[in-house]
Length: 73
Image 1: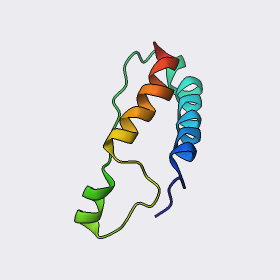
Image 2: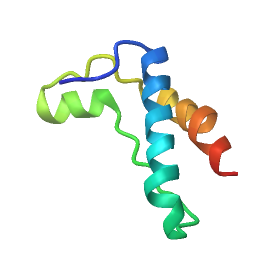
Image 3: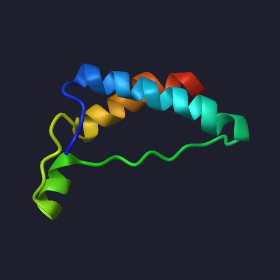
Image 4: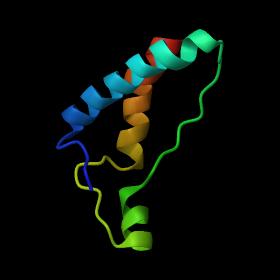
């Protein structure tokens, strides 16, 4: 599985996500967002695959809080 190599890379990816939301979704008038958090451990237990470099739930929530939420509040 492909994923960011570090938490810093995940931060860069979240900036790409923020930019896409701003350019593709926000102009449509959507005023709410639902984020799907995927726990790498859960994926491994269901599929046997490891998601290398993907932050856990706490890290993903921190990325949303630090990179996505400020752009839309």
